[in-house]
Length: 229
Ligand SMILES: Nc1ncnc2c1ncn2[C@@H]1O[C@H](COP(=O)(O)OP(=O)(O)OP(=O)(O)O)[C@@H](O)[C@H]1O
Ligand SMILES: [Mg+2]
Image (cartoon, rainbow, N blue to C red; front, side):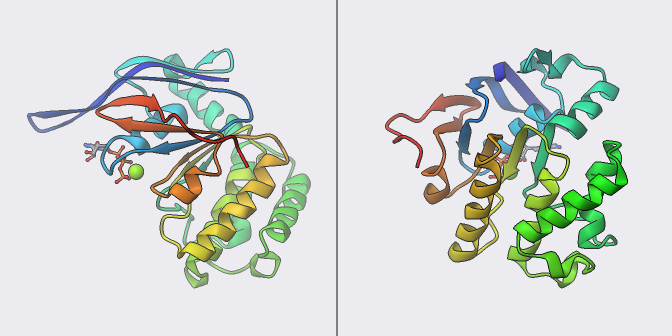
């Protein structure tokens, strides 16, 4: 489903050019769960941004299905983001001026979903993530784990086939992180969604079908990963 071919990306700050990706390649099958590991600053978020069409590589190709995302004009890349991808960001990105319910409805409005259907999905998902009674709360009054569950629900509400998660449990204690992960497993596995999940946690990695390690600007498969549980 996803094919990354020799992706290169460098950032320039003033006169300093800092290469981050230098020919990263990988394939991810439909429905697969891939954990993406690598030291801080190795380019994991950069890579997710390329897969999610938030940014384009300097060189190389991002293929998703039969579409070459890295070559799409901005307008079509934006459509791709809104319909194919569900993001769970490293720093959540819940809008503080919108309630939980409104945060959830936003991706459906951007995608042009029928409002009645959007409300039904929103209510169903909030039920599933255990926050049905917090629909009208603002994110800043929620606990970290609750916010994280809202972010999971928001990534799923427009029913995208591909979920990109950037350390979705990074700011949570082990138990709450485990619960969020259980929830993701329940919601994503049952609908066969593809997941790329950035993590520093071996516990998270152990739940994935495969582990890719980003280091020195390239991706390699980590061998010896047991079959998915
Ligand atoms: N917009 C930018 N301008 C300049 N440098 C950037 C920019 N975005 C990222 N970088 C640099 O690129 C490198 C890779 O950043 P990235 O955020 O992809 O790392 P990461 O692997 O996600 O790290 P972490 O685990 O800490 O989140 C870092 O050195 C970072 O400082
Ligand atoms: Mg990052």
